[in-house]
Length: 110
Length: 121
Image 1 (cartoon, rainbow over the protein chains, first blue to last red):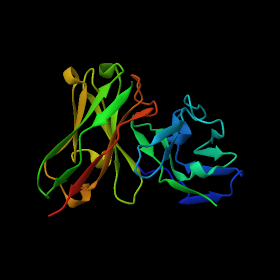
Image 2: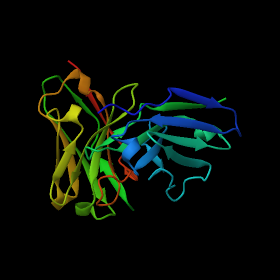
Image 3: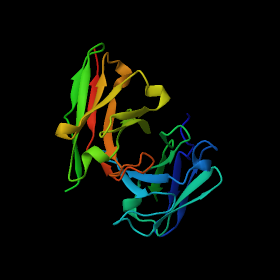
């Protein structure tokens, strides 16, 4: 049960849009409606940003959106802001009735 | 207020045992899955396992099976993560988290503040 694959880092200027990919397999992302994304600022608890592929919890900015195609999911952050600088992790339910996180992506706002 | 409150930081020696805790409040604890997540220094998040307090149904990521024990005492709304013999490689931050629902596939909407475990001779 390997971690989902994410790019190590993604960067963008304020106001730009960035997309983070999350690649799994037919045993997790490809067969799951339950893909989520978390934002993690160092020293804080992770925060849920997207659940069930594309749903936003109450209070999360609509600048964050999620999608999925085949074995890959994506998180897009539009109108990038300085406060978006953090680590981002995808997660998926698996065919083994467990969950698996992605390798994590460091987002830098230039 | 819906929250998970974890026990404080621990410093232990290799070979020692340890049990850390996570207490839930503000939600129907017996009916909500509670999971544990590890973050080793400089590394990413790792899903360790999850427990359903109602019947203690527990699932582990294969790499953690046999290495840790997840348990619960629903009378005090608390779940535990336990090691019988710590290793230096267990040094990490450990988070508990819950979807706040009875569905194990749901995302973790609520997180504890984390417990830092340091294992050093």
